[in-house]
Length: 251
Image (cartoon, rainbow, N blue to C red; front, side, top):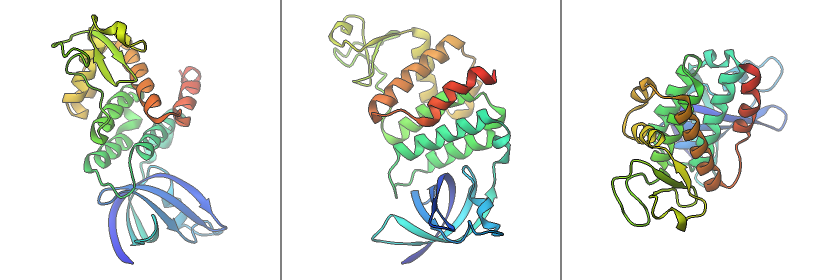
């Protein structure tokens, strides 16, 4: 077994036997990892506190070549991200980001941009608008894993440029007005929503968050991306469903 060291963000945890945890990390050097942490749930044990979801750690682990469950031997906190735990809303958004990364990435497939994106969102989620951050996060993550919708021209006839038209969730692509009748699932896409989506694709997170947008375009883009991701994965996100339930109450 090789001994490895890396920065890692905790996506989720689950109890294992009487005193241990199985932790799913997204690490800088190795991508998604599953690690066994022994003896952290015993009475009086203080190490368990550092394995809260969303925590940024440095971990040392024994890499098992015949298993995707590695043994974590050492850990130290780099950033606890306590600020995002100050409200149920920010906790739920952070859970959604973690769930997305867990579902859309493979084990041992490193992506520095995904690590930096997730770390940025955990650090600033408590002070940024969660819904807008979700849109930017979704698009940047989809781009990194190769799932970004095709936005350049009409998928069917190649007509370009398209400033508004239709979007097919099944095809994951733009469809022009003339070709829309050939795609029953294609829904209208306004020029404002399409422009916003293209802006988020081309600009970094900070520039995207600074862009002034209308509530309508953000809502429309949210529905488009949610439908697209749901179709690709074939199942809903528990955290997203919970968020939809609690937001009207919290606001």
